[in-house]
Image 1 (tube, rainbow, N blue to C red):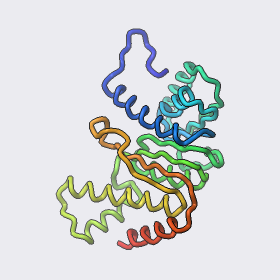
Image 2 (cartoon, rainbow, N blue to C red):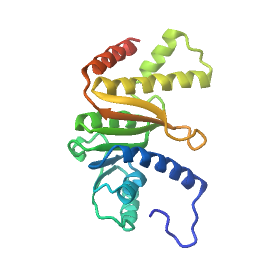
Image 3 (cartoon, one colour):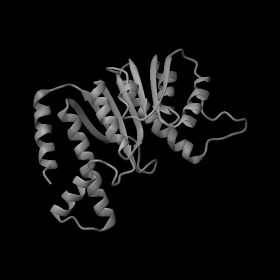
Length: 227
């Protein structure tokens, strides 16, 4: 669907991407059917293959790079299943691009603050499922100053690798608690082996609106934010 030049073979990075997409297709298969939003989609590998292999009939692709959307249009020509596919160019923060109450939102390697924007938009749209794989941690992430303040408060050593892992843990903890406080039961799991990608953490969230869990998460997030 995506690499169809005569005589072309998959590169090493393509094979790794295939492993990631296959793992997330397994996750999508459990989430049921309905409108699927592939956001910060790149070439929409995941969304289009969910149409082809899992039978999703309505796909919304949100991507800000027109060149990548052109690649999506090209790949759509190889689909063998009928589906309603909407291509929307713009930023994840633009809520006008989002459908109401989608069944599933996916974001594979949403870079830096894009992961937080995906979370906020998915919560606002009241999606049933969110499958988010964050990547590219750094100072542009909203909770990064919080993580740095907590590291300083606790006396975390400034050795680069240890310090980085602590900051990443705080960032992901805040994301998980934000989801749970809003009513999404959330699990954090490695969805592929680290040799495939070092950014292998999947945040799997399902909307349940369970009051006790929400209250507990809200209290824990307030403690975390009290740096």
